[in-house]
Length: 310
Image (cartoon, rainbow, N blue to C red; front, side, top):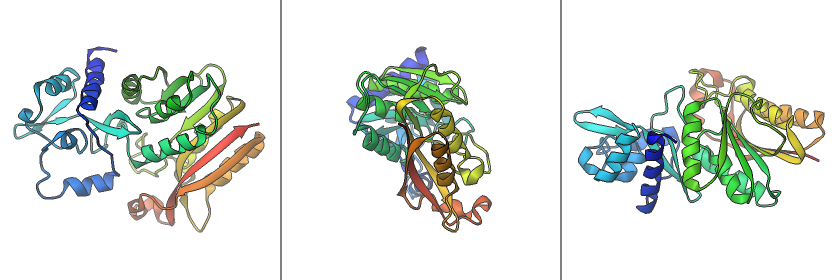
């Protein structure tokens, strides 16, 4: 780690010792909360590192202020105020760095309710069985949630985190260090940089049809399911005997048709894999239905798919 990375790691450690806790909501909820009267500037640590509100330098003690400055993670917010360029959220006993609100940059590192549901799906799947010394690959890792949660369930596992976004890999590497998890980070949009076979492939791909084509959010064609399908296809090709793909994503449903489910079922059949698929939440991000790409869509369901090589 360079000095800036070390400062961010120390920031996480310091916040942990001070009992910091913040659960990240959806962007729509976040916007509503910070728009309330009296929420124009921060009053405490959760306002600074969770709600991304501007603050007066005097609100932070010298240690935390120095760490933000050393990390290059403090921005001028105008009117004598500053703002943290990173957010910190709690998930399953660990603290995770990710991008400050609003996450509008093309290389933003997203974290939200999907992160919590993804962690729950991994726990439900791997608590039943995880082979000793498993090779785990978290594809499109973002802030590193998948690989870090899985590593805690699989003693002796080797963990690889992949992403096309170097900013995401940087924060994921720091988050893993804070959690005491050794990881290998691989930058790329495929698995060519991942050597050997995979015992557990994890994926929480973007699934929104995003007009801005932001990589962390845009799921591409197939009603936003194309990225999810391609990540799964790549993982299937590298699965070891008994290996599994654990996919958490969303699928846009129209007239009862789930094109992602049908495509994944066809993929599993073509490779002789066991396949299970279920809706984890039947209706999320309803505000997206107001956007032109969703004119014919009735709901967006959050789904979990498991593909297992026999």
